[in-house]
Image (cartoon, rainbow over all chains, first blue to last red; front, side, top):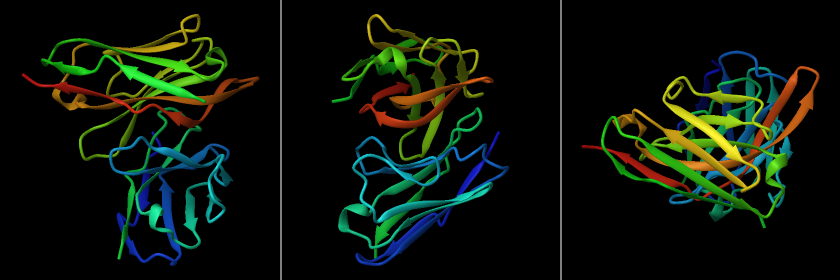
Length: 108
Length: 126
């Protein structure tokens, strides 16, 4: 089983700042099969990034993904008020299709 | 518009059973893989099970294998999760979620989840 470890657990930033979220895998993720999701309180998750670096439909270009192998990053270039939420990475290259434990992005 | 609507959640005693359903609309259901993902209260996301479009490939998390059964009815645009021998640790919101798939010479690859339902709460308690 591939274990995904996200860091930091909580990230406190201000609107307008840059956010960098990390997702590290216990073994290499097959191909580029890593996604990022955003979840706000009381809502279902929403797909942000798929295949490591592709933005999902309707996702603003301030969101970007990068990485390979065991290290992946979600970057939000300039934080907007609506970006404060919990973010999860997930690998889907092998079963079980594991999620990271999440990073909470909170307003400083 | 893609819609996924879960139903069937509720309160059940430990050792009991429950069947979740997910009604899909707004897309060609028979061409997509489907998933169940759960989230315990105040916790993170946990993948539960996936099924490919033709039900050829089915996968389970170790935590539910042998107790849960995923299935689908493409004629009814519906996904199901039969949950038996329920435990307190199965208490969670259960999300139905869609994934694309690609066929390779090695089989079918289930891609990322692109749409989620709003979830149905399952509570296992005496």
